[in-house]
Length: 278
View 1 (cartoon, rainbow, N blue to C red):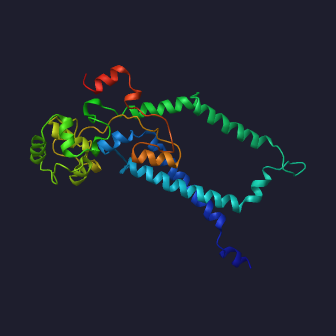
View 2 (cartoon, rainbow, N blue to C red):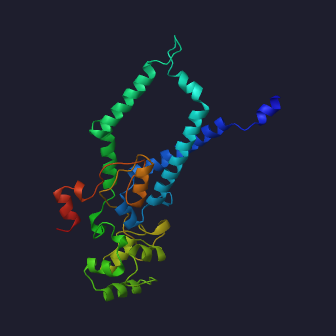
């Protein structure tokens, strides 16, 4: 009989272990998304952490967030009796008001209100995240417009103030392949194992900012790469799964949702003028 009990599959154990693993992955991915550059900058510079792009970290965060949610629901169902006991009065054993769950409710409300009305220490934490995001910004190598990696080569040449022929000639000299006037800049960069930022530097005929900083996988590229830095007005890294998706696709979100990022709307007048070369 004892052997039969030992050999039985434990759904409680499975749910507990999966919850623990999912929590660890979400903690790591959420922390990285919290301090990652906004999506506009991450896409422009092909920003990566531990070999993964911001999109990939956001995808991981969402996937394990769903796994965590489903496992938690299974865990609650399997442990419904112990859970209900937390809501019983210790003396009468009836459902009643207990200090523990009232304290938990009050704490949750305080966190919500602190986030909603930007009250310390929550506002301090969020401001720290914003400052880290903005620290990636380097106006000298910024994109001409937000998400310029989605432009075609012809459109990028216009933004750089050069003709399509000049842009094509400069890219050809750098031995880039797949050059076409209607190719999207991000696709051209991917085909040549470089970054949209570097494509723009070549088209504009501006010098690199550093050796290999923008190259995929960290390898150096002839002429060097621009430093993978920048700012943006996208979601704060951090919060729940839905925000994480936004963070991956265009910015943010990371451990969930967030507020405005470090783009033009968050700049001082001096910073904005410097970023536009005024």
